[in-house]
Structures are given as structure tokens and as C-alpha cells.
Amino acid sequence: MEQETIVAIATPPGRGGIGVVRISGPQARSIAEPMLHLRAPMEAGRARFGDLLDEDGSKLDEVVTTYFAGPHSYTSDDVVEIAAHGSPLVLEMILRRATAAGARLARPGEFTERAFLSGRLDLTQAEAVRDLIEAQTLHQARVAAQQLGGALAEQVRPVKDALVKLIATLEAGIDFAEDDVDVMPQQAILDALKDVRAPLVELAASYTQGRLVREGVTMAIVGRPNAGKSSLFNRLVERERAIVTAAEGTTRDLVTERVSLGGIPVELVDTAGIRESRDEAESIGIRKTREAMADADLVLLVLDATQAISDEERAWMEELQQREAVVVWNKIDIATTAGEGIEVSALTGEGIGDLRDLLLAKLKAGAVTSETAMLTNLRQQQAVQQAIDGLDAAITAVDAGIPHEMVLLDIYGALRGLDELTGATTADDVLNLIFSSFCIGK
Image 1 (cartoon, rainbow, N blue to C red):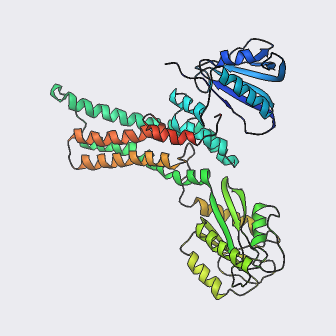
Image 2 (image 1 turned 60 degrees about the horizontal axis):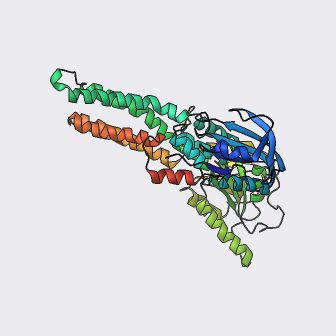
Image 3 (image 1 turned 180 degrees about the vertical axis):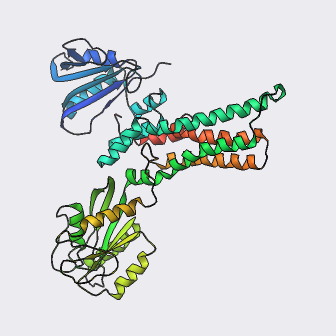
């Protein structure tokens, strides 16, 4: 059965300088050509300037059309991309003409799904396409581009090859035992399994850093009124985002801003000062502060270095010992002493650089930074963990002297984990979940 030809607008909704419609499938060229008058015939890999024609044959817009002949295209099918001026009416008209000529509107992520199904991308590369589109920091974009280039698959390939070689050797020893084919000694099997396991353990450890880079963290700034929380917030976001006055209780609602800290996306939350209050609006703000503290990945407790620490603040410090938290003594420019924690002046900027370094170290604590690739989502982490679990079971079985036929079952389980990582064997419902989260047109 011939594959359907699909079409979608590949640029964001709304008006813009340029809008692109992408057509992919065996009929892509025959569907596009009747609505175009090009200065030169379509040629693979060449951009052609021309006119977009209305249904009556009159000129509607000037366009640049690029034709990619399969299999040398993103989807491995014939692909035509029409770049018109970004009028929603013009782009919708191209869609209508294409669907009337036999194309079908593409589902979210269907172009990338076709690239995966044709072998143009593996599953880790397909996920990197989505990560690159959604990147909010330059570091996120760099990591996604690295994954899109196949860094993760390249790191796993020699591990998988070694595992397949071990399986083949054990299978041969079982199938041809009567022909005096040597069976690997027990120690050699153990050494081979441990050699395969070591790089997978290192890769699994990269998930902590990969998740941070991809998802980011929430950081709540808390403390009593007039401790300088909003001033510190403005310093960290590097602009006057929160209102700062000498009056206590100015902040009555949560103020949030997303910033990049060492390439990690951080959602900063400036909160209302915690104190007993009879003011209804302030009381609601204080309740939201406590909720923000509970939800935050990291808490900054801001203390006023010009005042003695209160019993309530001591209680907060005690409570936060069970959490990822940093105690910040503010106003050191006018204070003589401060307690345990980092000292800053939100007014002058003194100590802010040290605070940033400390926060980044806190965020990266326990993470293993990989120079080549890292796991960036839970699906990838679970697939690698499945492989490690299979290898652990195989090592235990070999140590116990269990026959190689049974050991192979565990090794095949490890191999399935690696196959699921790259998508060599992946359930349809998992694929549907992954590609449905893409934007339409990609």
C-alpha cells in the first residue's frame, strides 16, 4: 500500500514575515506543482523562486519552493516546502489546495515519526528534535543538537555490539557443543558482562544532569518581610521584576521569572514575607508562600543581617535542613556580623556571584556530566536501567553456575533494554505517546 502524502504548516500560528507549508509523501511534487509558477523547474536540493497561484490561475503571492527527493530528505519521502509570506489566509489556502489534491493533514510529530520509521533517525534523535524545539537556554539547545547528531546512539553502539558478540559466542557453545566448540570459561563470561555493564552505569548516572538540563528546577525565595527577598530576586533575574519598597509586606502574591543558571533553566519564585497578619490579601500571599516552599526543588531562605535572628527563622532553618536549601544573609553592606550561610548585598551586588556559584553547585550535586551524551528523559533512563538489571541478573546466574541457556535469557533482557533506548523494538503506544507531544508540522 502506497504511503499517504501529508501536509502541515511548519511555522508557528499567526502573522509573520515568512510562513512555511511542508508536504511529504509520494505525491508531494505532483500536488505542489499545479499551484506554483516557478522561474525554473523543481530540482532536488535547490530553492526555486516563483509565484503562488490562486485557483483561477492569478498570482496570489511570491514564494520560495524547495524540493527534497526521497530518500535524501527529512522523512525519507519526497518533500516539498513552500515558503510564502506569513499570512494565515495564504497558508490556509495552500493547505486547502493540497488536501483537495489528495494530501492529508499531518498529525502532531508525524514528519519526525516518518523519519524514525524509515530509519532516518533513531528514537533518541527523534526525542532530541522535540527537545531542540522546546529549548529555553543555549545549553539546552546544544545538548539537544548533540543528541540529534546521534551522540547517545554512538555511545551505546559499542556496548550493544559487545553484548551481541557475547550472545553469539554463548549460543555457539550451546549449539555446537558436540563439535568441540569451546565454551567461554566462567571468568571470561563475568569479565565480558562487567565490561558491558560499566559504561551503562556511567550513562545511567548522567540522567540526573540530563533531567536538570531538560526540565529545569523551581527555586523559591522566602523569608520574613523586608529581608530583601524582592531585591535579591531582581538581582538574580538581572532586572527590576519585583516591586521593592521600604514598607513591609509589599509582595502579596507569587512573582515568577525563568532564568538560566549555568545553562540550567531555573524558575525563580519571589514570595510574600512570612509573618502573622490580619490583612486578608497578605494572609493569602503567605499561604501561597508556604505552598511554594513545599513545591520548590531548592529554597533560598533570606535573613536580614542587620537584625537578630528570630525564633521563627530558627524554626525555618531547622525545617529546611531536610530540604535542598541555602541560607542567605542579606544587607551585609550595612551589617557588622552575620551567621552561618552565604553573605550578600542585594543593594550593591556584593556576594551575588558567589551565591550564583553556590546555587549552581547545589543544582549539580550528585550529577555526572557526560562530555559525549546524557540521558534526558525518564523513558531513556528506564531503558538503560532495564539493560543494567538484565546484566546484573546474568552476573548472578553465572556466579551461581546456572546453565548458559538460562544466563542467555537475562542477557537477551539486557539487549532488549538497549533496543528500546534507540527504538529498535518499541511498543506502538510508547511511540504514539512520544510523537503526539510534538508540534504539528514537525
